[in-house]
Image (tube, one colour):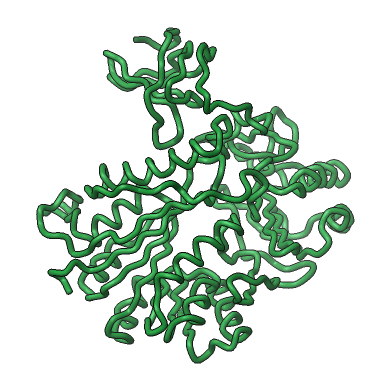
Length: 464
């Protein structure tokens, strides 16, 4: 099979990125936006030995699960992968994704239940992050195409709330009126690089990333924003380096408040421009409620990678004591404010620092802590996992947005994976240190391939 060749195929399954999988005599073909059971004419765009990649030319027999995407640039933008699929099949796909990762990567068999749905299938994101650049010599605001830094211009985004459309319009008007340009990654020219917005209970934290410290006409941008947002703060982050990192220097507050208040699970909290919060407020509530329900009143909780301290506070309110570890100073400061606002100073301790450096001393604080892990997509540091495996903790609660790193980390903790002499992870035949008591996916990111998963591990009887 050669590049540009057209063939008729039928997909048999979905891959980890939501693409259709076709089994051929010559090997395996991956086709984005092709659903299981669908017959289509596909053009081969890349051929590598027994692995091929294709593009749909025509869907000949569509699947019952296929629907028309709401977004006009869905097939070009890299933000969503599943808008062409009905919602319930999306939930099944994500459960299978977690189950397959646990088996293939972690070596663990577990029958994963249906993913907990989001009450909002669209318009659920409370955070918007858009690059501002150049396309064909013209200013462009949008999202990156899949696996690239090529901006796909868009007028609105269906997975964001209605305010995203007038905001995009305001950025264009600001640039046109004030003679500003989007950033060109090749030449390094242009003043505006990114616009970031976080909504918190009807209040907004807006950050503009620019290559200059002072923007001409900024008052005009405020005038436009005043028409869109009833209450907002405005920050400017200076970044003139040729880098893929979005923020440069810490955002400087130019207008409004440093942070705003919100309420979740009976906890009053604050969040600033850089504070981590889950992007789907409704699913976050379901996830956190379920996580806290797995703790008891006598527990001492170590909440590692604690972010702004919201979940730490929820555990502190219910349990004997909760320690939160977070490396971002702003987030840790927000956690301190949460403790104060909710009268939890005697039950909640926030430590600013890396988990790797903080955990050894922290493990001496309690004989039988409940460990809570909510790491970034890259997962938990291997040294932390080894330390936890030897710590004697009877229960470990994990929250992960990446099935692959979740399966790896669970494998290391349970002992189904072990390191060989070269430091590589291999399957182990030794008895497991931990059992999987719970694996429950939550659809934090509808219309995308991403899924949030809650896992509870408990020591096996032999280890107790």
